[in-house]
Image 1 (spheres, rainbow, N blue to C red):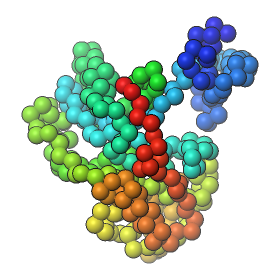
Image 2 (cartoon, rainbow, N blue to C red; image 1 turned 45 degrees about the horizontal axis):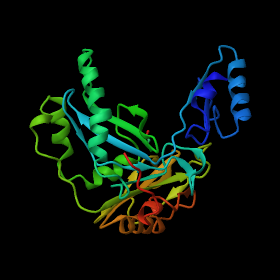
Image 3 (cartoon, rainbow, N blue to C red; image 1 turned 180 degrees about the horizontal axis):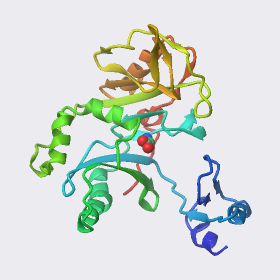
Image 4 (cartoon, rainbow, N blue to C red; image 1 turned 90 degrees about the vertical axis):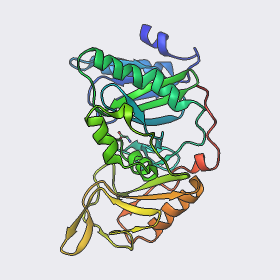
Length: 302
Ligand code: GLY
């Protein structure tokens, strides 16, 4: 009760977030504006053997993924991106590993990357160095830009999928040299990263049934499966050859990655590549980057 009072509405929040503190196959969280429902879920979690519950702040703003390459002391941000975690159009259905992404973020407030670096990445890198465990590699900050300011949702010590495919398709600087500079403690002395103008979009093609049990073995055919066409290419995530037939072998199977002068052009190219594919056992979201391209995402304040 006390935890719900502390974190719940009406003090500027729209809902309670009550989580089972353990693995629950994606079913452990209740996000509800109904206090009784939130309390019931908390009681259910606590009633389990060794039950524990986490009450979290409700995060009401758009999500941002920012990747920073670091040598343990200096951190270099890549372009921010946004990914789409729900399986269905309009952010419906269960969570997935990611159904698409785009970069840059036309709705981002000015100074967003600088603020994330100053408030989140730099203090994290500095604290790890101070503890004698400097972090060298790729720090993935998953953030929400809420009406109450920047919040960290998660850190990963790896590139994010599928944001990386979009971000790296706009990076002109040789990634290998940047990673080598990070590995050898020289990031402070490399030239600023160079980026292509325009935007990039990736749309993920997943096997029917994903994120439940995917239908595997569906045949895949099409012109881009083994090559690139200018600003468009397909990345393989879950494919394999059966004889000389390419088939789906995982939940997320392919990603259509496209660059364009703006998000509209990049989206159009990615979806055109998908329509050229002959892959009847795959599905994809049709609204990746759509709201951003249409200017429908309200610019959050920092
Ligand atoms: N895009 C989410 C992740 O890589 O964890």
